[in-house]
Structures are given as C-alpha cells and as structure tokens.
Image (cartoon, rainbow over the protein chains, first blue to last red):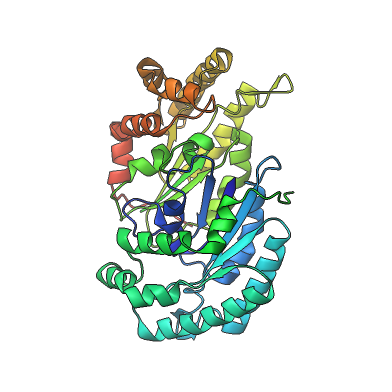
Length: 199
Length: 199
C-alpha cells in the first residue's frame, strides 16, 4: 500500500527528534506500507491545494493500492502582517476542492488541525476544525477530530510551549499517532485492502 | 537547517520497518534539522531531474540554510523490456545538469548507488558509480562511494536478498547511515553553518 500524507509541519513531524512525526509513527513496523510524507512547513490549505496533485502523480503506481491523508489548518489561522493567512471561507473552499478531487483517486481521510499554545490562534483553529469536520461529513470523507483530545491531555501543548511554541516533541507526536491509530475510521482506512482507483 | 534528499527508493528507505532509511538515520536526534525525504520508488536520474527543482522550490525558505543531497543510479541500470532504463551517457548528462543547477542554490552532496543482489545489474551499477564519482569530482561536488564498503560487508546485500531482492532492512540502512555519517565530507556538509544561497 502507498500512503501519501499531505499537509503542514505537523504532518512532517517538525520537532520530533526521531523524524517520524505522527504519520511515521502510525506505520512503524509495517514494511508493506510505502509512506510518502508530504508535509511542508508553513503550508496552508491553499499551498496544499496548489501542489498535492502534481506531487502525488509522481508517486502513485497502478499496481499498488493508494491512500491519501490530508491534515492542515493551523497555518490558515495564523496572522501575517496583522491579517489571517487564509480566511475560513477560503479554507473550506480549498478543502472542498482537495477532498473531492482526492476521493476520485483513492480512499481519503482527513485529520483535523491540532491545538497550539497561543489562545487566540487556538480558538480560530477550533472554529475552522469544526467547519472542516462538517464539510468532510458532507463529502463522506472520514474526519478525525484530534484537537479536543489533545487539548484535554495537555501533553501536546506543554511540549509545544516548551519547544518552539508550536511543535511538540516525541511524546506529543506519539499521542497523536495513538489517537489516530485507535480510531475505527483509520483502521478501516489502512488495514482493508479494498480495490482502489489509481491513474 | 533544511536538508532535502532527492533520489530513489533507497533514499526513501523502502523496506525499513522504522520508515527512516539511511537519510532519516543520519539526523536522528537533531531537531535543528528539518528533513524533507524526497526519495521516490523506481526513480531514475531522469525522473529526479524532472521533478527536483519544482519540489525543492516549495520547501526552501530564505531564512534557513539549505543542503541538497542526491542519490540514485540503481534504477538507471535496471532492465525494462530487455533494455536499460537509462543509458550511462544519459545518466551522466542528467547528473551534470542536476548537480550544476543544485550547486547554484546550496551546498550539494552526492551519495553513490548501493549494490543489489543481481550480479549483472550490480556490475552496471559499479560502472555507473565510477563515472558518477569522476563527474562529481570535476564539478567539485563531494561524492560518497558506498558501493564498495557495502559490498565488502555483505549485510546490505544479504538483507536485500532475504527481503524483496533489492531493499535491505534496518541493519543495512543503519550501516549505510553509519558510512555516510563517518565521512568527513558529510560532517562538513551537515555540521557547518556556512552562509548559503537560497532563492
């Protein structure tokens, strides 16, 4: 199986001393999975929308099942020169296009944005996450809300605050990986070898 | 520092149960390094030449030093429908263009192709590796010959033969990482924070 994960620095695993991030940790020990970690630091929904199809086309083959994961949103909710990098309506529009196009290629799953220590940005992330969850539901794409359990645990935000202010360390990424792996939608997503469309 | 490693399945780390490959293993514990593993299964020198600049441009920032690693060649030496996938002259032409363009952006380092269990393909890889080493020397790009020590040790090929016939497991990738990390050119490459050109 080829697993392509597109998104931001949290997908990449920035700050993880093991350079695995939550994505790498979900496939530890699985040599049957070829993982392409396509997280890019600073990426917004618009950045992912602009590059994911081209980068996927260089990594997809017809003889192996494909799975597509998307996870972003925190950078959309960041301020740049006093303005939001991406307005919520635009985040939703980008996501509608991404998920619809991706679902035509292969099974798709979305992992919602995690919390950050900054309370104002965090509140905006919570709001965008809710809207993304509703949109994904309308498109019948599984959506994993990780914001709420990561907030409740506090490990993620404590590591982020102790680090560079945004990215956790090994424990936070492992906790997110554990949340993802324990979700029924994820298990169905990566364990079933359903026939899939590829190009 | 941002470390971008372009190449084939050996760069990606296919077959490594830890999903690190030799590239990930060289930066274990270094949270100051943002690693973008841009290895793609099956890629030849031509495939890398066609995509690396575009993919790098989405991952490079002006405020962090950049390092570019390239490693490929085994797929060039593979047969497809009875013919070489890439003729040696074409491999060298692709590499000349890649290394010259990359060196204009940032410090560049090339890791030569590793051996494979198949003796005919392995002989072609040895020959192409020699030519790549000479070319890199002419371009003043550090070139690490890993073919010879991996052959001598035998761990790499034994794991590859016991696996899918091409890719080693954790021990082979660790051995390659150790070879790379112990090389003076690599240490200068990843440890010196020389000012570098970015776009």
